[in-house]
Length: 205
Image (cartoon, rainbow, N blue to C red):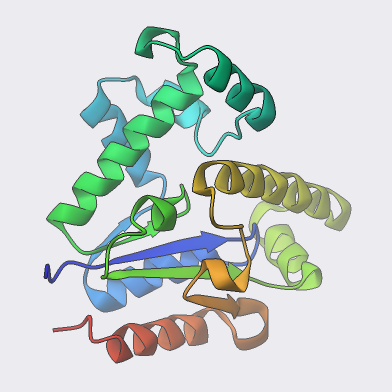
């Protein structure tokens, strides 16, 4: 069995999932991928980074697309760009998992790597007030605009995840190894909790 492991973190907007992942990766001494992943996908696939970024975690019109694919199988040249970008993402994430231990934020990494025994799937969430406070502080938005952005972004992330993950649902407990409310215990404490869980799993050598 490979000694490489991947921590896949899904997160609600404003829950601090990015910061948790970055700090956890530093504590573990492993690579961290969030937006950094986009450049690697572009390089591996030969697509432009702007194109990859544009389609990053973009939901597919799932019902119409599925019906079309079932009725009229497409050649690769006919496949919509967002599907091509997702397939490139799958290949890059699998390649990364074979080569190194790392933390990956979002992008259905837990679903893509679901067959790996060394996968830790985490969902970071918080109540709306905590998320609004974080977004207001970080982005200088009003509370109303922050709430609007949180709802819109989480809807997008949920749609993307639920379409591509098939047998998993974004944020549901049985779709992840751990779900953690970062608003209740704080970012640094969430990092410690995840570190201890990874240690209990026997993944640290």
